[in-house]
Length: 274
Image: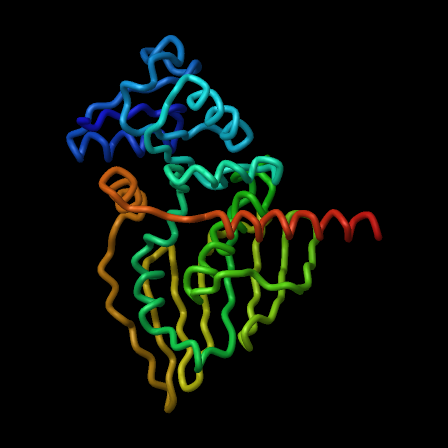
């Protein structure tokens, strides 16, 4: 079957995806009731090989259910987070669902992963801030946290998340601290910053690595004040993830979502006790 793509939701992200579909010389349609010129309704979806769901997070699952009910059996890309309710985890039973975990495709992340030595790891810290009023209506864990929870599992090759960890929350800022397999970890997320930041700092025996995911840079700090800027081949993560989705790649974001919902449940328990 020749590839033909349907984009559901032609907002900011949907328009970016459409740019790459044009670059890949693929035919595509879109459905968005708020954008003039697309399909009038969702119907006859079986003629598409791939569907990209780029709607607001709160309607991801409804959009997914709709196309499945219409008989679609092809590949489905859904922006992160795939779902915002633990009741919908069954969506991951569909192995044709591909989650938009774009940070795995960030060249700084790929470069950093190549330097990590499990037996030498001491700690890893993730910091991610968005500027005030960006994504102000989206919960911090859904908007920012899901990326770093996925990267934590991906970078350290863990097939489970920590059983115990501490959550510190104030307004729209989170700090989470954990220890797993003798590695200390810390997550710092905020919707209350006046500057953007996406960094990973790794303390490994004999060296510290700092990865800047915005500038796509990795720097190492070694003994005798030796600082090295490690070459990173710049790339567009969204382009790379689209290529993987369309031409045979796979991903599994189920565990990251389980970790995310575990944090939400513990957070609610803390609030009740408070």
